[in-house]
Length: 580
Image (cartoon, rainbow, N blue to C red; front, side, top):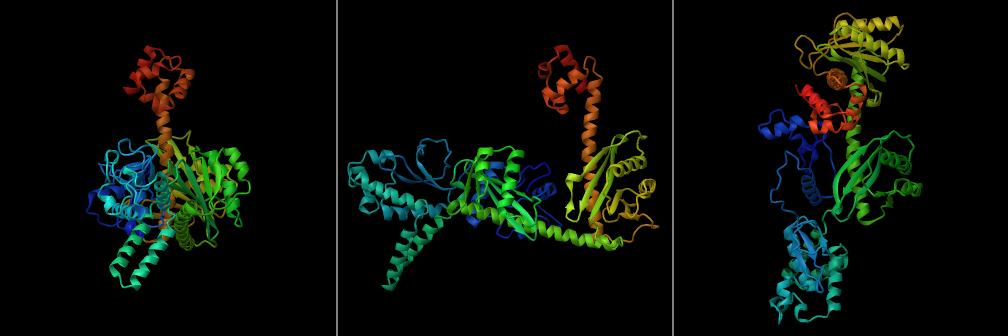
């Protein structure tokens, strides 16, 4: 769960995602911590794993990476269990809870072989016992191993081959190590098949206790192999998957950094309807890496791209086609995650189209509206007046078409003149006419829009003013339509009204955002211009060297003095003026 600034608020896992998320959005929340969390949520990202064990490990991994405010953090930093094959002449098989990057050198050598993490400490211990029975590897500490003159009790119990006193050759011991390594790497089907055969034989001979014991060993052996797939590979890797559903394309990106899953991104590129996954990735990947800071050195895709050699040379990366094993599992995870995101987006689009049909009925339009725009005015007591224009089509908001206008040469607080100016400027530059123009305001603002359309001879456009109404409560807005007397009769639960509110709120958000940027720039710039000795050249030096207007205000006298052309006296004067 993210806030508006993109900071991670909370990380969780769920078997039933809908039920889990819905539990947070109740009408009455008695838990103040959850109520505080919900009030800050801006959007939610989802990663789909293969099973619950992977979800458990990934949750732990991401919590430790992002330290979300609303997660309960484990202060002792207790980690998931690992299995170690030590780097010795006679390697030791051991259980550890420290991660591979743990700094306690007494626990394991940097050249030790490390397997994991695993979802269950109990399963790891049971598997180690089982491996002792099969391979009879040593598990004792080095001090104990070096000082033996005769075998210990484990040799008597047939759980160790006693390499400490030379009862097994180095070659034969390393053969057992090799088999244990293969088992830990997941190549254990031969061992499992052998155990299944033994279990069936024991069952046929009515040795039910032995059969049950072998059954449990098989279960533990299979359980330990369900460790998280994203923790085995080192380095920075990007995994791309293409999902196409109902004419819409999604590109899912899973990011692995330093061998751990660090997050995901979903993109919805505009592509011709008959594009293949190979064509989509061939066009998408170069654009993505040329527009973004590149961290990954390896890219994994399901499809082999025709121009992969050119892309590798141009981007200085290595491209790998996932055919089997771990890489194919990554691709499947990316496909599952992307499919869920695409389904959600398609559902939202379907709901949006339904609302669009209700709007068509409300305004008696002959066709479904294809292009809608909304204007809003924002200022602070007439200062830094800005107008916003947001654009919607049948798919939703077209953010690339959003525009804001600096309103000039009008009297302060004259919202009517500001609305007239922005609509006129819009139509003087815009050739494509919208089906509907929404205006945040009442009858006065609507009248200004009608004047502009009459002046520029613009026909057949629905003009709709959205007034907050006498109570100014959401759902009780009044809608005024050009050419109609009075306001439209509409209920608070109208889906057409919900769509209009959505469009109006988007225009309001964009207007406020633009106004605040202009106001901050105007206020600070005007203050700099009043300081004696600060001309255009020195203002430019300050902005370039300190990085922006806010940074100038936050800078110390020593930092200001380091700017070219700023001496101590001038730096002190700048600091005093900005802080007084």
